Length: 359
Image (cartoon, rainbow, N blue to C red; front, top):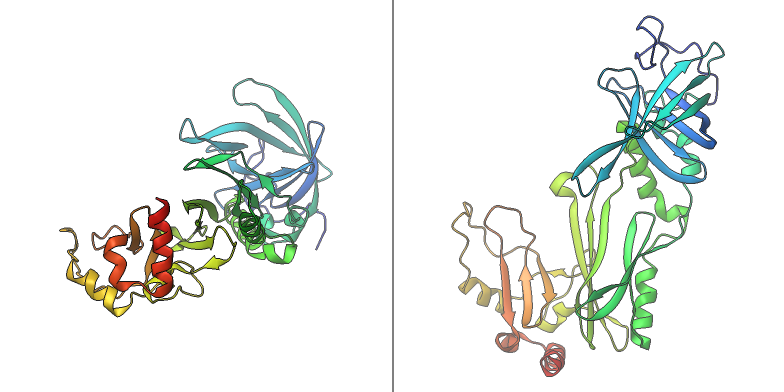
């Protein structure tokens, strides 16, 4: 619901130059200008002070945090060279009699300043206006695909494609099989708002919690690529879930035909429906690996070998492994193509013959 914010219950001394008894709460969504640029800003009603804003011609939320002395706000960005967040601007604000705000944005080093003027447009969102539709509606658009720079994997060029918090690859070599693979890879990018609801919901949550437009960390990369096979790894670290939020999968294609294949069938198994590349060890292969299994000395709980394994293609063999968890009980077995012979199906023998023949 949209209504004027004048007369709100006072919550925090957030305005520069005002004492606690007179300060108005900034809680709500505001629209106005920073210099000559049109912006939308929001301030949450939390005790630490969090907010966000974006330019209408550049729909990317910028986090606002309260200064330690409570007299203003600052914005920052992560500096990869410095390895930390660095301040990129400071805000000071004053309340006007008409319920509007005026103030100043200032560069932290150069001293350059720009005027700020804000008008209240909504108090929607209770204590978390930055999570409200009033603040987020204009942000929730289908994004154009961002095309990365050309990279090289073992002499073969590719580039990354990104949209709506998802990343995939485009393989930059010729061939009908590769063209088909590229179509499948590109189809994983969300191209409609309905497919971006998880992305939007995550952003809503973190904007309301801390003014930060957080999203899942995702990336894609080739892990195996020959004239016969291509494997792409998809990695996701769900925002806010710590190590438990990490997941990954490995999809493999026949590079000549473009058909997706399951390397687990080469050893008589099959890939998990929901996590491509993982599967259970067939009994004969399990017995072989168990016989040679020696846990690390740091392993305190000697778990058996029943885990769901990743299977990945390597130059010298197939690797069977579980996600490392730092316990010292991790399992990682590389079985050379020569050692695999007793465990291979007819399909597996034909595939390995191709791999060995083209090395």
